[in-house]
Length: 91
Image 1 (tube, rainbow, N blue to C red):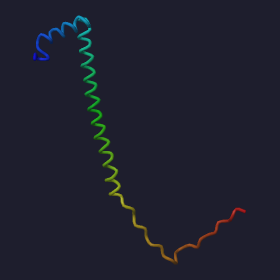
Image 2 (spheres, rainbow, N blue to C red; image 1 turned 60 degrees about the horizontal axis):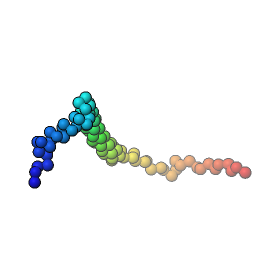
Image 3 (cartoon, one colour; image 1 turned 180 degrees about the vertical axis):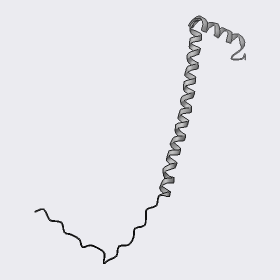
Image 4 (tube, rainbow, N blue to C red; image 1 turned 90 degrees about the horizontal axis):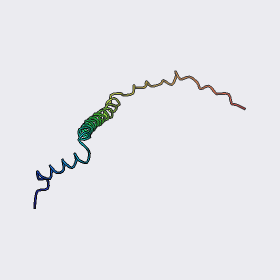
């Protein structure tokens, strides 16, 4: 069985691409593919940075909540309590 991508098949594919797309369009297409790959790589890196930032944000509030404890409430003495005032009823 012959090799799938032997040298003569690659040459035929290159000549076919030149004839089909034209000599001028091939460098432009290669430049476009390069820009697209660069943008894709940048976006993938940005997504991983966003994931790290989101994970750091999720971990931070837990640490803050654990540090914050409510202040103790002093007991109320029975003789210092003020009598309740009755609210006038709306009749």
